[in-house]
Image (tube, rainbow, N blue to C red; front, side, top):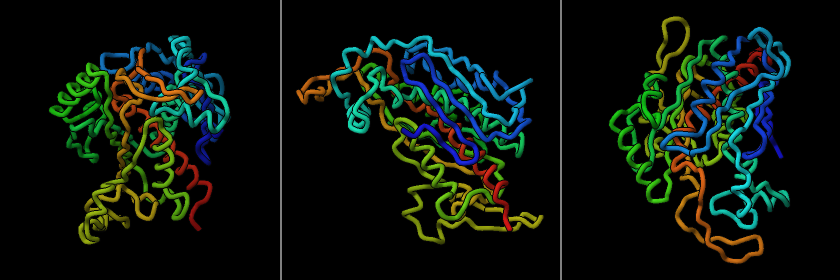
Length: 360
């Protein structure tokens, strides 16, 4: 089972959904990077469950630094973070150990390993993403320290409601002012109404998260297998419930001519290049162009719903499954800090790669 991500900045996560906790080890960090435990806690608070529109599971998600940090500065050794689970209820899943829930990884995990953790999905649960958000917070500190890079994510659409968001100017405070992290005020209200209606109907919704990294210099990434876009694809699609990713204008580019789609280039006046448009999402040939790197990640509707569904048990017998307990009617608003974290981890890794293999 692969639990490690990254080449030069490597993270390894561990822990199950309803086990004692979730953890992450971050290896490859340079020494002397300021890391704030309060900032990590703030990022985790944006992802954690609770609230009228999310799972009722109450986890404080308090990060504990166990190694690699002294007086708020990284030592260059592995940085280990532990996040204790205090509201786990493994007994809630006792009745599910003998059936396969529709849309979940129950059957496929058992097919792969011959065993599975039925307590909330084990490693396949989105609980694991708390570790990614903690690691992403550290990666963001590195990117900010070295280049002043700003990463902002937002809810771009949920259900039938799509927002109008400009990735060049969208701001963190603007996003966080919305209860569903949609910076388009009218759409935010409509999204709340849609999620509430889905919850009352015992159903769920999917949608899209947008993310942008501003201040990324030109020249990160490689032109073949280590394209930034391929690494972002791997990172984003590894998030539970993620089903699609668009880089820049994405699918819309497939309907255009080259003259309509190419980003026109001009001089920036100091020997560099400036793009008049950024349809390509800040990448040319898989290498950063100096324009903002932006993408959208699509998430499916939450698989566990209160509506009865047909499935089978481990003996192959037909059964009816109706989800009960604490589940999100829509995971998209909580996915925003996870998407931000994966963007930060990819960019921090490529930053270190560019230093390890400088141009000749």
